[in-house]
Length: 260
Image 1 (spheres, rainbow, N blue to C red):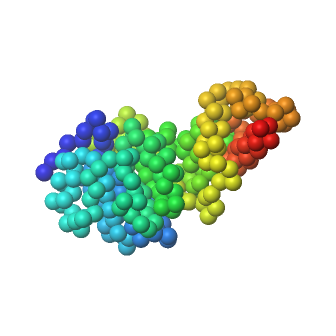
Image 2 (spheres, helix red, strand yellow):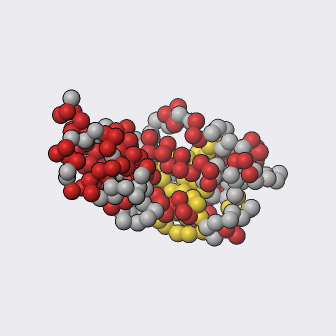
Image 3 (cartoon, rainbow, N blue to C red):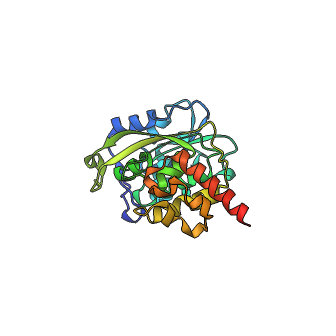
């Protein structure tokens, strides 16, 4: 059976087996026994995951791919979730820690990361292939022009490693850009000392006008005169580390409570 890559699903099937092996090997697997692969397609990566000690599950939206996987990978019997990962309630399928892995469709890759963050209690490790630009943005540190919202929100909860770059010609069809593989390892202390939605709002608001100083970009938070004059507000958002963003959100939250 031939599975045709579907443009509307953002499918680019990996052909290079050595790269599939490297992606599978990116999972260290110390704190979980199950792995969920997103969008396995024709199972090029799945093949190597099934050789590992952990139990492999897959989630696939494409009906043709589901049939192909069912016919060619009997080891996946009862472990294929025919659904959209972004609409999945992971707790309906898993009651113990899992790792996430995949060659992700470019058009939903950032959403996959944000869903992983939302489910971080369940996901201690994550390895995946993205458009290189997105992978580098997730891994970027302060002071880098690619450092932004997804960098801060991911690194608040996970340590991020950019592992390697993948050229276009190893895919069918080949994308127009390079890809990059990253690994996320959940931090030991992944609970925030400030309300998570508030923290997210501070970060997004700051980067919404990234060329302005924080004094200007965050003025919608009605900062007190005393807080507004702090030297940190003379900085631009890309100059703050993740830990500084967390402390900043704490200070703004406390400032708001004191003004009530």
